[in-house]
Length: 99
Length: 201
Image (tube, rainbow over all chains, first blue to last red; front, side, top):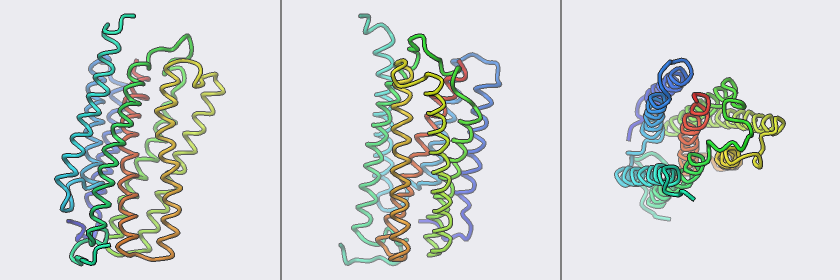
């Protein structure tokens, strides 16, 4: 477990990266002249990177004797979340529910 | 509570009970991810059904959303600082950063409530369309979590002042920090897949 250091380096770095990612996402979404699909892929990826930053640099998901359990638990929660979101949109918008 | 205290670990990890409580809270966060996933799924399915009412680009205002985002992101950072100073047993810095976290959270909530009132005045209510129903349910659930977090934090500050830093209060502080960071994680996805998505198209 870290935090022997005198300054909260990982927090400051995580915060700066989060700010950059936020503003890049705004720029890509509103100022860049590319197709809607490409914009969504880029800002979606930026969101996932920023969530990862929070998880690892602020929440320290890997620390402690249960670190591995936490990572597996989070990975499974993310998997279920993707199945729910992508699955619902797929089933309900691609003609499976025509009537 | 376990009598085995391991002093080489940070306060919040020193007892078996504390470690189990922290593990339990991570499992709760896993369940919360799934809760919010269901609401994002509803929004993803219904978000384009405007029923003749306003569309996202009619009502979303980039400036307000950016201010909300920066308030919550900064509060997540200051909450991390509070735990950082807790691990240095620096009670004063812990309280300072934790109170700043609370104020930023309250600022976020103020902006969000103002935003909702503004929408309702423009005729964009929960009853207007499927888009707005799913929008208000998703955003409202997140806002309710922030509200609950603020009440929880105030009670914890009182307890920190009364009892000082013990393994028990340190564990409670650590757990609320996980909760608060998680709320920012949810907001990142709301910001991206509700607000930015709505303003692109």
